[in-house]
Length: 284
Image (cartoon, rainbow, N blue to C red):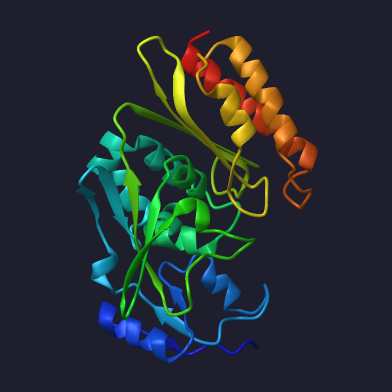
């Protein structure tokens, strides 16, 4: 039988910082991934666990200047119900609705999704496409980490051992459009084979600018695809644009074969999903 690690349950952020400064802990909130790892069936379990579920300082969704700020403990169910998300970032609610069943949506958090650092994390391409900033804290202060620097390697984050992820700030530039697609074995309760987020701003002529295309499940970390973004930058959403972008994306990706899909399948599906997104926006 696996031995469960000791669990500390701080009641304030200050107490959590003190515990993290004294010894290495693995933070846990909803536990939808970590509780599986604790059994030891998927590798070494953590030596100590820090249960942050009761830290109310890490909850809530609010506007702050020209950004939407989500506390680390914001659950997928809260994202689905939030009027602010519905108004400013409806693609986040769409993505949250695809994650697990009601039990997982009520306990799983956006912070946990970021900290788990899975390349298949459903919300992570959205954060990349939106140029989110992640805020980490420890006893002597806070620091902001651009999302493009947050997952440096497979299953790793940029956080230091004494830090907690506090909140995620998502800028809201005027006129930005954001779309999301997830492809899994089935439409519900499935890990993604390909997950995609596409953001852009259109000028008065319908031409796209500031294009950000991010994908998950096709590389060791969530990624942006700069060559494909270049094809879309300054272009209208026509069939010719979609053909060029899809072809470029298929050549730009280097997915792996694993138990969920082959590399060829992921490459072909990603190209097809992008083509479909552009077609939907172009109306042809």
